Length: 406
Image (cartoon, rainbow, N blue to C red; front, side, top):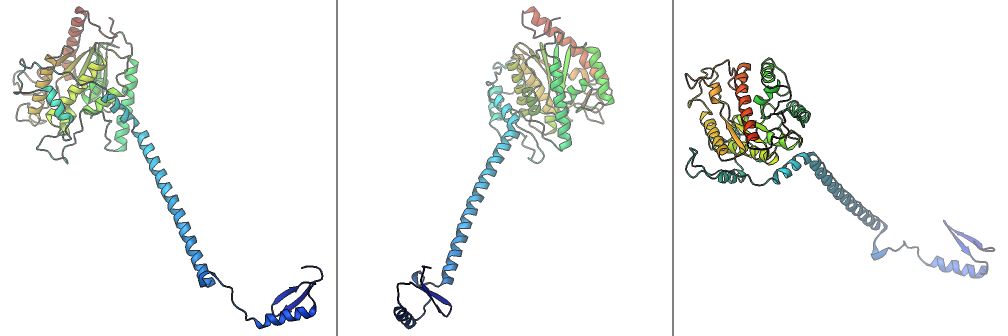
């Protein structure tokens, strides 16, 4: 308040009158003010304070809602980005293995099949394209619920039936990788075996677990092949896609170069009710990968072992799977005839009694799937002899025999 100003109280208001105004002038001003009626403050467009307050409140709520929507949208985008990154990280081994698979050239198939007793107009290349472009790898008489066959051309790790089962598979896989590395640059290595449980039993385990039967098979393996002469890399229950994945991810290191690679796979694919055509092309695709990675080696395709009836022990056309196995083995042999670096081994005479031509003795294959110690002995001795013949043939032709140097 300016110095000398007078203060006049009017009800609840205080009016400051400058000192320059005289008392009479001040009385006149008060009189004029008394004549004016008191009115409420005026708001834009004639709205009351309540209307303005409501309008401001509504605008503020709209503003907050817009910001919350922006934040929610940004949060969704970040969650989506994080999910994609996590998916790529988890799937990187599979994506990388598929990328390596995609880099392989188209397999070479024999075109001259006149020496093979094959179906009319049969073509390996045509069958390859049909299976590769197909999304159904099951025979027509099986539904998708009963057939669990995967694409035989794509490497896939074991699909776990349970976390515990997958951990057992992965532990066995890691053991195989270490086992393969231990044979790197081994000068005495003659042959490397790849396959499923039948191959893993050579090592003395079944999905990493040692049993009395697998121990017996392992003893025969060690007595047939001297230390450092052979390595067995199999995992129980594996199909063609799993073996393909293992070859692409550590079980065939660059320094592992045996002169002979022995391949036996396909039994479990049959249990999945895969079509005989998809199983055949799955086996040949693995053979192609082995030839591509080890062009100096001889790849031997071991025919699928007979699967006798568990009670009658018979192995003939009355047994489920007999026709498919016979068909697959026939075309494996035909393929090997037309490929210089591929051979075929027929296991049937080893396990089927010559006298009956259809009986598989129980002491050779007790469960109808896996050779016993005795069966492994008979089979392994013939394999060892066959491997020696292959190496001698390669040496006589001046061909490379990998790291083998007797």
